Length: 215
Ligand SMILES: [Fe+2]
Image (cartoon, rainbow, N blue to C red):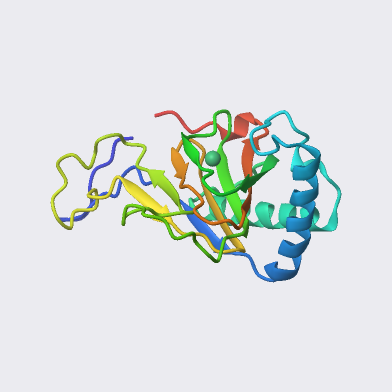
């Protein structure tokens, strides 16, 4: 896009990576139901977390799933509004539970063929095993990596590109939503308590109305 600056001075803030966080209200009661549901599914399928052909969680007609689906949709609407999309958009949600036991982690990855990706945190460990670990481990956290590979290489103190990563320690009831292209890593769980989350992809139902104006 071509622009002619109309002020004598300005900063153009280009190519941001927008990651939404939202504490979902009234989550305690529903989290109990979701924990029970995920545990039941986990008992029925020992590869639940890694079996991407397992039945989609969001296809289930259960009160807790319906509550979560409504909150995912509300969060997507909020995200789209905040990035400036002011016209109707339709999507489908696909989702799956993650049960991380002691030592479990999820290596860096992104979510192909999706527009947005997100995670809702159902249960986080409150304890941690005493281990002779490095002092910089961040058990149970999720780290997002700057998709613009290497922009931190020449960053000097206080410029906005120093950090090539963004790390969050989730709490139960937190929902995160980000562009599906962003690589992320789930740090090892160092607790004997399980860490339970539900991840999802937002896949657009295509419409030619989404095409940007070409200049
Ligand atoms: Fe992921």
